[in-house]
Image (cartoon, rainbow, N blue to C red; front, side):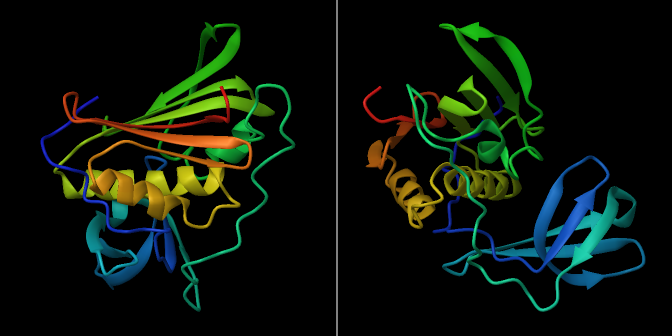
Length: 220
């Protein structure tokens, strides 16, 4: 996993404000607002709560299709039900629910079982993020999201989006999950929070230039 020397530039987020969805030929999906379009290029701006913005330019040859949303979608949207009834040592989160919108970043593959549990793992194309999911796909036991600390703005913006999706999928009932995670990371410290039957843990590993976010069943 590649990493650089600066803190991921987390801009207090609860989700990216977006108006258009751009589908790239490499399979990536970009949410943002198209602010300029020429014969060969499309400029997309992503805006974050708190005023942070990032603009990226894509060649039209890289774009498979565009979904334009009119009027602009609100920042806060009702999320589909993301959990199942908790039982045994599971979190109550299904694999499909956890992976919603994350599949565009992580091509997951099945590995050998770990301690008798199914194990899937995937790494982002830029090498700055890795996701590991353990347990039965109908009720996973644990998910580990590993992020490289980077000074690359585009990589940091992608990691910010990944964190937002990860938190929304794992804790749909906790509206402030993403903001809490962002505050802990910006403080460059560790943190733990429990909601209902699930615990989220953050480890800030400056020595390894990594941030590890773990979701597991409470008490395990």
